[in-house]
Image 1 (cartoon, one colour):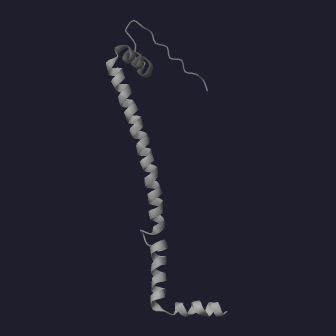
Image 2: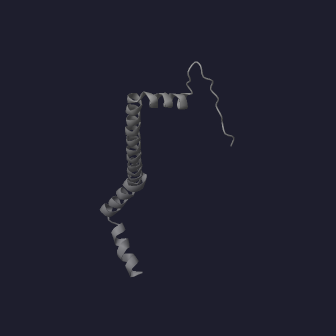
Image 3: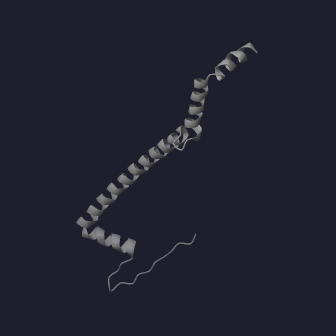
Length: 99
């Protein structure tokens, strides 16, 4: 009981109560509170990792593109497989596997 009275004495002080109220407001209630900042930093980290992934993927696509543009046989193979292109004298059959 004596300890409780010791802490109760501080709650009567305006500055202590104002400081506690301000901290509660800034941590939980305000629109730019600490919790939302932590969540935004986490999201920023995830987005930066995703950016790195897409930059690596873009680099690989650029290399594949350079390789395709420099090799006619590879370009023809790519066009036939991906876009189902054919020569005029050829017939094209597409086989779709059942699931």
